[in-house]
Amino acid sequence: MNIQEIYNKDLFGRKKIIRTLMEYIRSYENECKVISIHSPWGTGKTTFLEMWVYYLTLEEEIKNKYYPIYFNAWENDDSKNPLMSILIELNELPEFKESTESKVLTTIASVLSTKAPKFFFKALLGFLPLDEKIKTEINIFLSSLIDDGMTLDTIKEAFKDKDKLEIYSEKFSDFNVELIRKKIKKLFIKNLENFQQKTDKRIIFFVDELDRCRPTFAIETLEIIKHLFSVKNYNFVLAWDLEQLSYSIATIYGNNMDTGGYLRRFVDLEYSLPEVNKGNYINNLMNSEIHNLFLAILKAFDFSLRDLEKITNIIKINDGFSSVYFNSSTLEGQYLYILGYLFFSLKYKNPVLHIKLKNKTLTENEKIALVKILEETSRIALDSYNNRVSDNYKIPLISYDNFLVLISKLVSTTTLRQKVEIEISPQVKIDIASLVNSNGINKLLDISLYF
Image 1: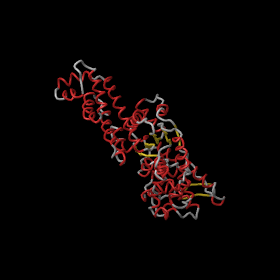
Image 2: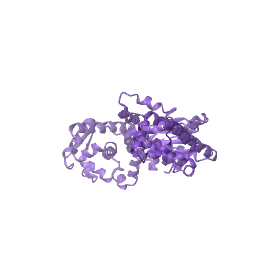
Image 3: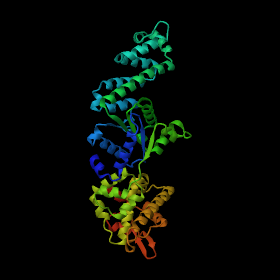
């Protein structure tokens, strides 16, 4: 689905959330407010931001009041300079690219990104002629550093004379460099204000996937927003998984740091996306009701929305899936369902265990871990399924011991030629080998080859 269809269907009721958060922004006229949208990976944060951007471009009344800008931080974290990455994104917008502020802000960013004093002033020389007022201010400041009256022109000449350059470089302590940086920052903020005034709209900057970035890139992006973009009529919406981003920051500052407190100093309002009905979501992706047993197993594995989209796409494009599994007229057939669905789902939830099981390289501890996963997910799934059907259609649970027998056989045999009987109850015994082979699958795990 494209974003228009997602917005119109609004499966998770997120239009209401967008409108509520817009009320918060509207209530602070002219102020810069930062909202964080928290939700675990793969739960729809990006789609939510895209819906919000679409909402701001939808109606004439809204379009004339707000200017949305979307920045995917993760797509840019191969850059060493978050500030330049943000400005490059801004330059994709025709209104910004064609503005006089574009060149000024880009060149200021180049200067501010230069660390060493010698190169800082070299960058400064190429930039300052764009603004005579700030050039005059810095010339006055420079002339106070040494007796013979230093100016930007004399510094420019010094780059031709190594001895002079060395003498001048000694005068530019970190303190003096930071004083000049402060003047440049004021000019940066002034140009941001000028651009906003030209648009005559409040600017809402959406920053996505900070939690997936390199820790240093994420931290620098937040610091840039705080120190350079805290400008009136600019608002920020930051999407992240607070827990994952906290782990990243801890790798820089140490595990004893209050990472949650550190992140909150950048944010005025925290909002957590509510949990969604994954069953409705899966059925919508499939464009129909899928088998209730498979639905229960997918929910039991607690896949993210992103993973569910991948899985349902694989099922839709593979006709073999339904022809192998959608034939549950007998209890034996239903158990083939369960096992096939479990191993299919395992491939996406825990691919390492799945591969090791296929290759028969599981250690004893990994075998036990796998059995626990299968027993727990099947129990959750069957409890859910059995609560939805009448007594005649209920499926008995598969015990831990029975899963242990099955996995042990799969690890130790090339094919299931011998009888592998699982006793579900005193009345029900299932020969897995016969069941699997009769359905044309010599090895149960070969189901994954279809996908």
